[in-house]
Length: 311
Image 1 (cartoon, rainbow, N blue to C red):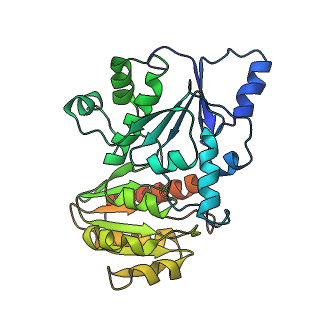
Image 2: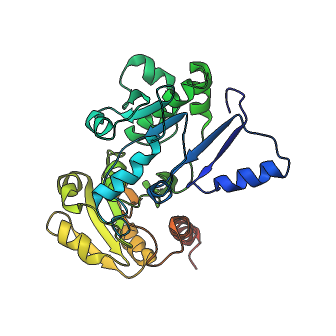
């Protein structure tokens, strides 16, 4: 869009591709570029998709409550590249060469990673997103858009002007020197690792919900380094307690509000109260958005209660 193209953005991110097709039939203008975010659920039975540019950020354990095993999950993801040819482009994270060879990718491969060069860092200097993983996201987006003629200047302009989306390491506000961050979109163990690495200060972590699988125990060293207290709520209590008891102080409450108020009482200036559940929301919420909205509602209620004058 910063380059002046008409763009449709949809897929698993919210607006179905079918919406664009129906609107086109009704007379809406044709997009120059269609940008889709696709899930393993969508890709698993997809047989005709051929993207000109396809991007894979990473693969980690996810949706194992749906897929038979990791092999099935990875195979579904890699269908993104199945019909690409030599004139198409596959943007892959550096280190995925064995995966590319195993699935016999025919597209021209462009490798991405977290930017480290002075030139790359300068291109994304205006980014307002938290965490080094978002620099990697920006780098991958630039490498993909470059194939359509997007210039470095337009990429830098787009990056600087991009406002962080709700529920993705979203700064909700500060209270008594404590930062409250809503990462309700953190629905996997890998997303939790990324969220924890986005902060330098002590973290008071909110986690819990419908567990989708993954190796929580692998995060023990990171939790010991980053987290001062783990406040669990809702479902999956046993998964988290088994993995982290004895590593950090762990508590459990029935609801997010109870757990969040518990952490608020413990928080010190400089701390981060982080909602990064590492689960789906379906034990208590309709979706991750409702969970994130509830986090923000609770923060607002605590802030307004603190501001009320005493009788």
